[in-house]
Image (cartoon, rainbow, N blue to C red; front, side, top):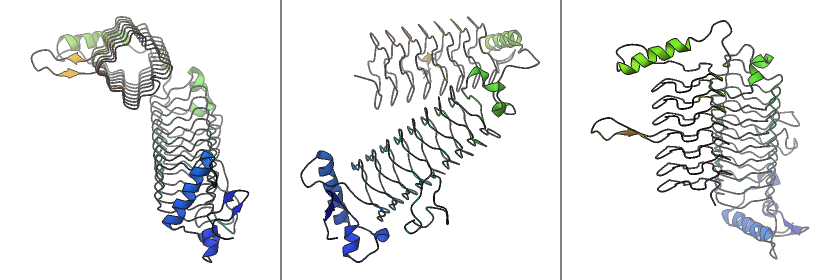
Length: 460
């Protein structure tokens, strides 16, 4: 086929290889030829005369710079994209079946609805990538054309490999990942809502703060994985393996502790044979506070089960409550200034008029909590030092929370999720809301003077 020849209006990049007498599977385009293919693809996407879809199947694009390109619907089946630079590019509905993407850089790329069956993304950089509804199930190139190491010898299909990839903040909502190899993958803060992860291998993966709500995890292997603050509400996990997984702060439905999959794990659950001596702990903490630490004992309630506890007006200043289960607890008007509530489960808790100045609430889950009138501004040091401690809400989940009239002055809330929260008349002056999610939030009357909103979503 001559260079530029078409079949049905579609250009074949491999024609360059045929013209030069090279096998299609070894085609390596010159920079000028690649630029021509991509330019004609842009014309194709714009519906312009002479435009042709990029047909780059089985081409050698290793190490190429393809950043900030629009390759929507491009054909990259079996292409060698190892070590390629593809950051900030669009590959929506692209065909990457069996492609080699080892060590490729795809930060913030959009691969929504892309076909990645049988692709190898081992060690790829996929921070904040969009893989919404992408197909990452098994697949493979035919034996005659498969690239070395891409598909196991003698195997007609292989699992998509994402092992050792960095996928922090990636959006894999509704992605199909059945049998995917994801061991030692960094999925910190990744969104896997309604994802299909049946029999996926997630051994030793990092899933801190990941959202797996309504995901299908049946038969998945989470052995040795870290799931601090991960959200598994409404997920199904029949036959999943959590042996050796670190489940501190795991957000699950109330009945999870009774299922066979969690029976032998360290999942937080109500004490079986002893009642927490809460009254004694609070009394000793009051002594500790009154004596500046010389008497009594600081409240050590990290990982404690305090669900639905009546703690109204409790004095827990500077208390240690990290990973505590405080779901539906009554903490109205409680004194929690400088308290450590990192990774705490505060779903549907009542914190109205509570004092949370300077509190540490990074990655805490406060979905549906009532913080009406709560004080989440900075705590100023006593004396003339002028030092202040802002409240810390980085990566906290406050979806559907009530924060009307709350004081969030100078709060550090980068990456916090305020989706559908009620923030009417709240004071967010000088708050750090970088990459915060405000989709559907009610902001009527809210003060945002001096707030840092870089990358925040949901703002009109």
